[in-house]
Amino acid sequence: MKKNVYMTGYLPLFSIILFSCSFAIYIERLVIKKLKYFGVYQGMLELFESHVIHLSVWFCLFLLFFMGFAALKLLSDTLTHLSMFFFSKDTEGVLLQQSKSGGWFFFAGGMLAIVLNHSILLMLIVFVSAALVYFFYFLLKIGSSFSTAGIMGMVFIHLFFWAGFGLLVVYTVLRLYNAFVSSIT
Image (cartoon, rainbow, N blue to C red):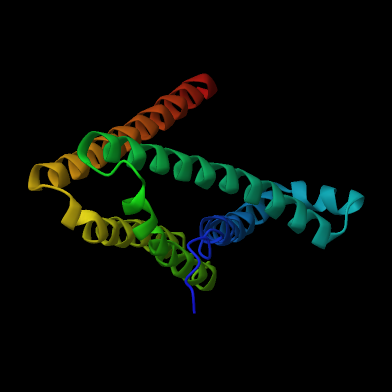
């Protein structure tokens, strides 16, 4: 049987859908609980049925998470291609094709996140674990075509970018939170 290299092309989309679904389900429960706490939910029930409210909140959250995970995928692919450009001697893209089957790690992580949607911490652990396992799988698949300095360069470019990106996001969220709190008082 001939192996088709495009067979796993759908995995990133399904993985993004699964992770987005699981995070949206968890946050939707929190939003509905807060709406009930503040008394807004009762007023909404006069206009809409309960399942319509739940579905609308879930769908909006799903779209937000879908856009976020799609952006992370875009950044990750761009960073991978950039690091391959700097540190690889492969100009045909053969190494990228060899690592495409690593998408199964994210798909399995997405399935597990759906099952564990009662805990945001567990879902975050599953997402980060899937990303790390994929990255090490990627390094193992392409490692034979790289020098030691090339592998170290690839690891450090990814490490520095994601650490900087994470710190920038945390800094921005803290600045927004402080501005919000100072405007209230």
